[in-house]
View 1 (spheres, rainbow, N blue to C red):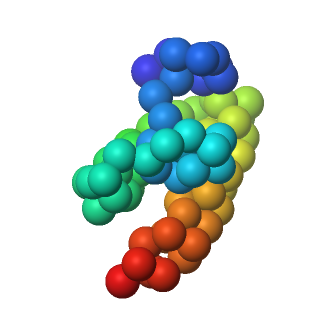
View 2: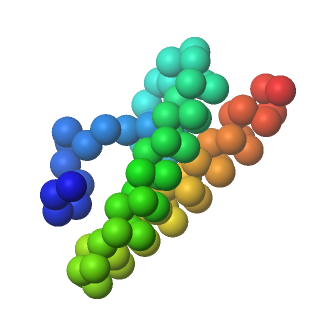
Length: 81
């Protein structure tokens, strides 16, 4: 995997879409599952990475994604259920 950047072309999951105020497609559970897969991939990358700078960036990205994902679940999914 390459160096992490934040651009308009970055994929956006459910949590990111909700935080950004974007409209969310109706398949919320599918988007939550996609978020899970994405973060698990970042965890695997983190475990294999030896570069301290990239590990710090990954840790910040993982923590931010988990906070946003948790907020999305609590505010939108759990209320609906």
